[in-house]
Length: 59
Image (cartoon, rainbow, N blue to C red; front, top):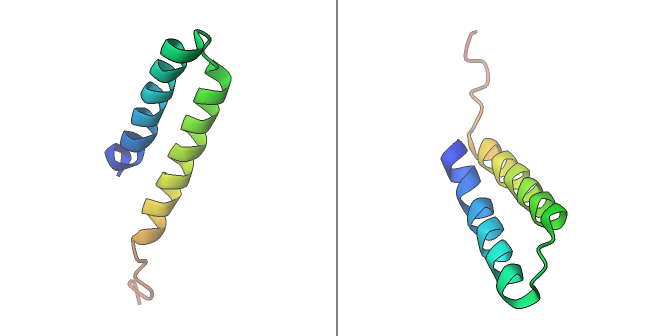
């Protein structure tokens, strides 16, 4: 689950950092890390919510 959750945000982080380095010559680290973290949390919560809970498993 962790590998699924981190793949897309990490690709976005690297791509946006390289894009800013090439075209802007100024990298906005706080913005990139913030977006990376928010995307990671959202995708982690989404993947967690997709796993069904088995009700009354112990009873």
